[in-house]
Image 1: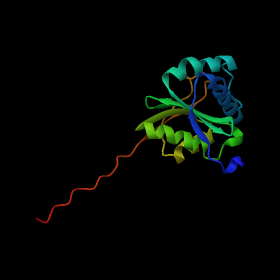
Image 2: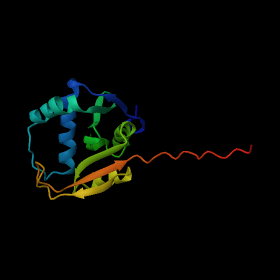
Image 3: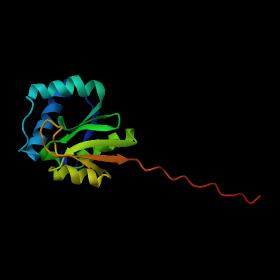
Image 4: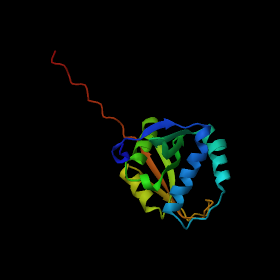
Length: 165
């Protein structure tokens, strides 16, 4: 089966997936932004996914075959994490995961690093707008970042037409 032509399967992740989810974040983040300081060990990151994200967020994974290739953690109008393995980027996997979050929330905010041009372009293509930029003083990496915001547009309802009666 050719993965390039296959839609990813989106599934809810459980505690047994947290090590793989944390690993996807590490690989994707440091492939894209190799200059970032490595603030946590892989074990600490897995604990963060298991102890903080899992109880407080919806966590979905995208699989192709038996391989987990993308993850998203979201809830309470925030996307906390969204990562796709570098070799699987550009195939609509991130868009599928983001679409799941947009179906469940009317408004979403998220942070991304200012120098992460790929992520910024991705979110802007999906209707997010930059709301605020910081110098990074308040994040662990001390890396300037951008707060993005998306809001569902209200659905237009047809106006009642007067009757001819």
